[in-house]
Image (cartoon, rainbow, N blue to C red; front, side):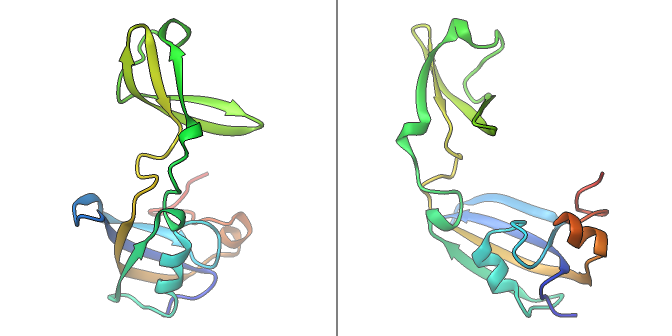
Length: 157
C-alpha cells in the first residue's frame, strides 16, 4: 500500500544536525496519520507521499520548516526564589500564556537568577530527517475523526 491521505504510516527515523551529527534515532517505529494532521514535519510528509513499506527518504529542513527560527524574545531571566525549589540547569518549567503552554528550558543559574529559554533546543538549526517506511495501513474512521493514530506506536485514549 502506498502512503496517501488518511493512511497510518509507521516509520523509523534518524535526525541529524547540519554537521551530520546524530541528534535522535527512532529504532522502534513511530506512527503518524498522513494528510496534513500535523503529525510530522510537512516537508517530510510531502516526501513520504506515494512511498511504500521499505522506501526511504532524506529531507533537509531549514529552521522555519523544522523547529522554528530562534526567537531572542523567548529568553528571559527570573529570580531563582520565584521558581520551584528543585530548579536546575537542563531542567524544564511550564507556564501558560493566552491559553498556550510554554515550555521553558533552564540554561543557566547564577547570582540568584535563572536564564529561561522558551525556544526549542533545535530552534534556528537546519536538520536532516532520514526515514524508512516500515508499514502503511488505512486509517480507521476514529483516527481520521480524532486527527491522530490510535493503538500501537500511536496515541492511546
